[in-house]
Image (tube, rainbow, N blue to C red; front, top):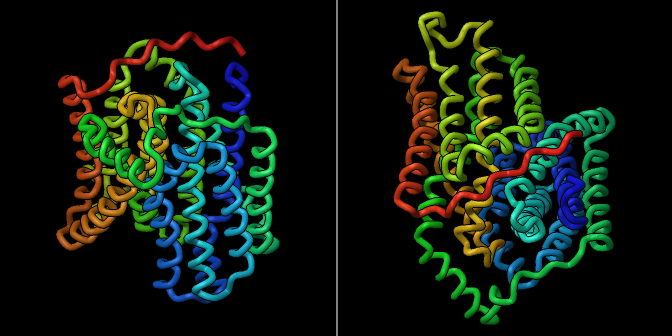
Length: 420
């Protein structure tokens, strides 16, 4: 971390703080809405869905604004908006107020996420792969510690959780306003002013066939990663009933710890032996293979996994998903930047993230339907086989794009890591 410049270091710490504040609150929001405020299940789903839609659906706008206005203003605006949104969640007790707070929370993420990654790419220069690998360590550390901090505060009061999270985002905004160096996109990214320029930028993205093909091939990786929040909890509930919460706590912890402990090692290993598309393809295949331990076999009961093998299979699945994601992530970001021509990076990232969000929403409907179908037909292997096939299919698609010459050339090998 110390080998990068001040701005990149600050963004890594910033991302840890963002995830710490977000995950100390969001895992407990549904319970607060349902039991603390007594909302109906449909209202809880609406509030949570609005947050996801406002973030994933607005990534394209956040990226465009970052390339037009500058990275730092969007980072500050996003942190400030989330400060207000979390403060509102502490006092809101009506559905309109909760929806407004949830939408603002999501839009805040859509503002700062593309700007942070574009700033990181510009600040790291040719060392982007290393920078994104280190960045992901801080990202995962926030995911690991956030729920633990939130649980400790929740023992006192949910409003205190919201207040502390809001204060954390407010502190991040102040620190970055004072200490984060301003960095604007390259001048050629803003050749045409106003809506005509924005439309021209988006037309250029729509004509960038390698980028579109890469986005389509990578969409499955986001669907697979999301199954930690959908398919694995369903399986945990099937296996363990009311004890599934404890099992999922272990699953989330293992997932984060694997990424934290293995990220830099995996990146260094792949950087010496593979080009970027090869590393991404192996990561995708590993994410698909993560679901194979959940396939029923002759040593399992007809109703599902045994009490001993089942929880172990869940943990193994989470560990393999995390390892595959950690392997591909830095090379995925580097490839995305290369395909953008290293211009309009935030806009490209915004478009990429919006496409991934659409794929996750549509894919989760399919995964849910597969669980229902498997239950009706008595085919417990069906969802897991389908998810494994998604990983293999995405890996094959990446390999085909590489062989057809649609992807950027390999990044230069990484230097050996310095001794601690």
